[in-house]
Length: 154
Image (cartoon, rainbow, N blue to C red):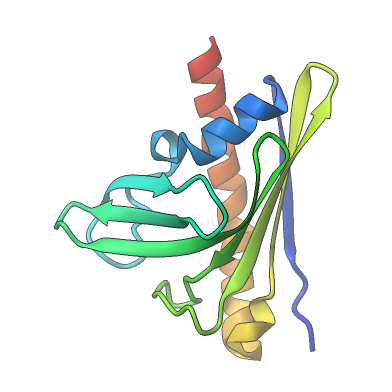
């Protein structure tokens, strides 16, 4: 059985290129330090800007956590990640989900569409738990991201 992807979107008042840049290059400005996925709080979050690049965080205790790998890098248009964090918020690259974010021009605004999918790779029970967690989490994160865009452009 396939577990339904999580789809969320937000409209931001900037062009797709800037929306993409703040989502990726500016991840450290909006990703909550408390979203540390079970370890010490994050000190910094970074996304390496190329296919094969890492989305990773350095923790306050000096350790590092690799969160995802960049599968597709199309600046101003879309980015796709192999999400290596599991339902129990630990790293496991053997059963990744996938996160795709599209940046779609809509007049003077950009619609940012996010799809988190392939939860079934973790198994039915763990996949459904993970899906439910991100179903609740992504709207909060997209609100923080949108507020950061407003802060940077006002």
